[in-house]
Length: 198
Image 1 (spheres, rainbow, N blue to C red):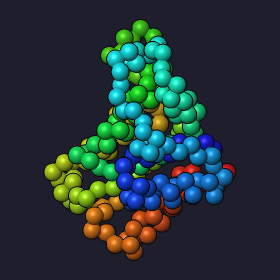
Image 2 (spheres, rainbow, N blue to C red; image 1 turned 180 degrees about the vertical axis):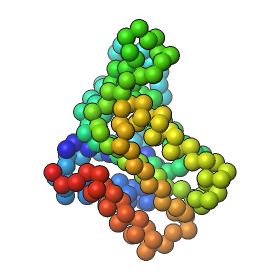
Image 3 (cartoon, one colour; image 1 turned 90 degrees about the vertical axis):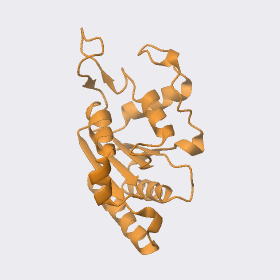
Image 4 (tube, one colour; image 1 turned 60 degrees about the vertical axis):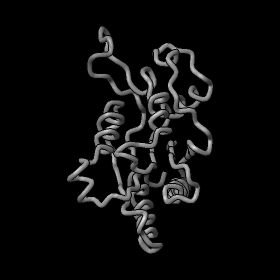
């Protein structure tokens, strides 16, 4: 199985990077092909230019590559911190430029874009791993966990990926090595369950 793994955290020593490393290792040991993008390391340009909005736009070769990879992926895994209840800007820009009409979804004939789209992604399952420094009770009571809606409904649900799993590890800033190792074991378990050995 071909799995697309996208990481969005600027610090190579972050727990997000440790999560991505565990995911990559787990998938490869299970016999899967991993397409891995560390968006910050690669210097991904998140700015969507006006001439790229149209479905028929001529795209930068890098964006064409990303679009090709996500359209062929049989599974997708995203790793990022919770910043202001949102993905980091670089990942939001990746969504804007790669989760495109004609690649990830299309509108039905006669629909000018105001209706319900038809999902086009081949992937059947997706996992999102988030880190946070807000305790769960406060997150849910005060903020309502907007990342849940963004990923399950606004991104993957819209694009036809209905088997969506999500894990949040918190509070990272005060966590110790034992706790982080337990979290990494949980990462391994979830990835192995959703994407078992070939």
